[in-house]
Amino acid sequence: DAETGKIIWQYKRNVPYLTTIQRVSTPSIVGQNLVVGMADGNVVALSLDDGALLWEKKIATQSKFIDVDATPLAIEEGIFVGSLGGQAQLMDRNNGNTIQSFPYTISRGPRFIKGRYYLGTYDGRLLKMDAHLNVLEEKKLFTDPITAIVFWKGKLVVAHAGADIKLLDIDNLQTVESFSFGHRYSAVLGSIESGEGNLVILSARNRLYSFR
Image 1 (cartoon, one colour):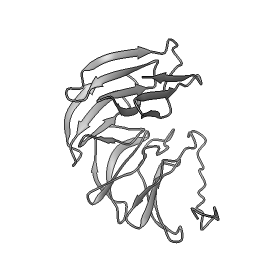
Image 2 (cartoon, one colour; image 1 turned 180 degrees about the vertical axis):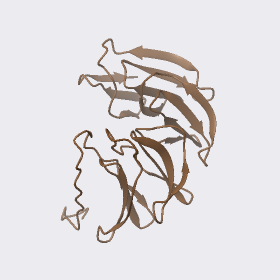
Image 3 (cartoon, one colour; image 1 turned 90 degrees about the vertical axis):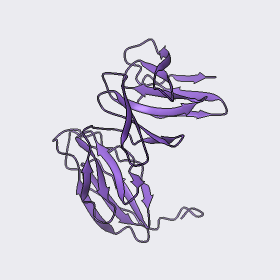
């Protein structure tokens, strides 16, 4: 309950795998249901009323690091989601059946910015897509996973599992500027926040960076 904090219902799920990060995605409300990715490679739909399991679908095809970290995205009749252990998918929101598979792997969901979706792949590509997830433009930025995309001062800031970030022109995806954290282990594994003209980043070495 938002006002009292009383637990209305809860959902527990065992994860019998040792080689996972033990993470779940940020839940998404889709119609009257709650859709969330689990650490065992499954996407589940729960009833908002009582937490009943409505359907579940395993989208990971590998045996290790199969967590579904990408936040499910409701789009048209489907739900777009992905796992590091398999291809991204558009799923039927009513039963979890696969409508379409995509030839890339993701760890984070797409960001909707200025009428377009921007999605980072596990192999370091940035995809610019229309409202139907058709790829309009693709740019190879890194050799490792893209971990965050944020809109800041009319441009895109893109981070990855490496020691630098890039500032991109939002129209042509060309690199305007790069910033290095100065250490090979200074990856950006969490989110980047922007607001009131500032950009704030927490690196994997627990250093907080603020840009204006």
